[in-house]
Image 1 (cartoon, rainbow, N blue to C red):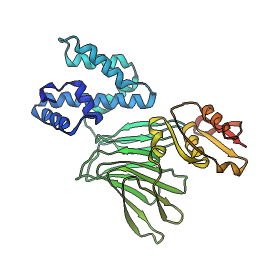
Image 2: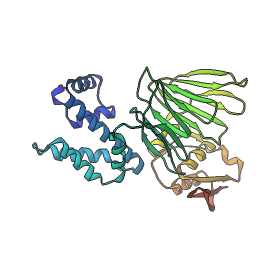
Image 3: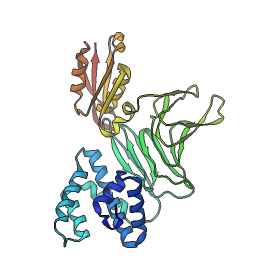
Image 4: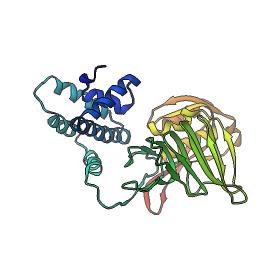
Length: 338
């Protein structure tokens, strides 16, 4: 790819991680050539982050919308980049893009604390101030500063999050949990599940490296460096841990709005569905736990999965609906399996 051929479409692929190493190098050189190139790349990056957030949260194909609009505009050679940018925003017509761009483009002022929370059955994507990305699963919260200062980039997670951390060797990225465990990374992808009302913290490394800090049974700080595809399961009460090698797509499919099962036990399947659909399961017959399931689906309705249970002889019925908490009006379904 010739660096003079670089355009908005190539920049979108660049920030999506779709380019080869030689192509990426060519874009890097092009960006460094002038302030104009840097500004254009920055605008595309901001727009990519905003539309990617919209796509994840609302399950619409914003990226395809960007490409469609871009193709139409390219057929009109005299249209300026600023007009292209405005038209993309007009096509999306979503308040969220305005809010996201405002947060990204507003002048740097005093550092503020930001806290994001997801309701039961809802997941969200968060663009962090250093260019890293975090996905939050159902009933999770993430606290972070509006601008990372000092020698570290620290966030505070209560719940489940999937992090794609932008590398910065001089400024480690640290995820704090409600327990005596935190994860330190430089640039990597990993999933961490640390609900404050749970008895365990699970950290699954997808790629890169994660150094865990935790207290042992004697309250002494210990360290463990995870290897890719390894899961560190920290038991809070005993301050001990176990290492596992689970099927990664099953553990992280939630961030893409999917359910991926591969010989997954009924117990684990119900845990996944509970977070996905804000439902409480009551298993009346313990023999049902002998069942396991293998399938992949993007289905958005709980009944689809309940009817799939029936193929194995598991029956179900809805018992009642209740509020998840006094502060949350999202109704929780209660399903009995027998």
